[in-house]
Length: 182
Image (cartoon, rainbow, N blue to C red):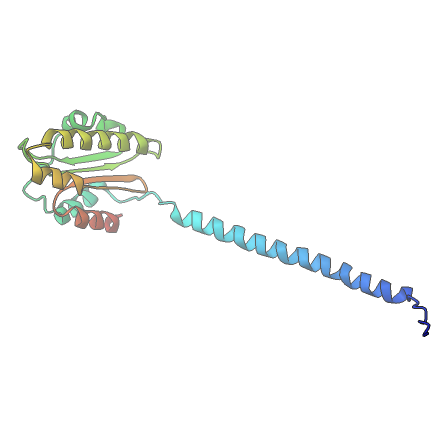
């Protein structure tokens, strides 16, 4: 029978192992802190980039470019009272508002461009446009297939302090001109 020799633990070896673990722990938490700060910075940058800055562009210039792209040259700019009649909002409450509406009730082409005074007005205008669109869709339901198709392909765009609503064959081109004008 073989007798095993007793095993003796050297206290100095255990202390060396403990101290290496103690050194790794602060380095590990420091690494996690760097990662967390980097992720936080990236989130901040992305959120900052998604905010549309307010534009200083004049509404007249933006409207001219958008109307040209929408090919609404034959249409006349409507009076301010028509904005109130169609959308239920007072154009004087905004920094500027331009409406191109059809002279004929059987035409669905329409362009509304509004420069907001502040961001709190966005929801009011969004609701007004949605209500106008619903009204138009109901008006042409059943007999105005071409008008209904145009209304369903409408463009609604919010960019900074501007809002655009377009119904027409070239609504996408109008939206591009709108974005480039700001």
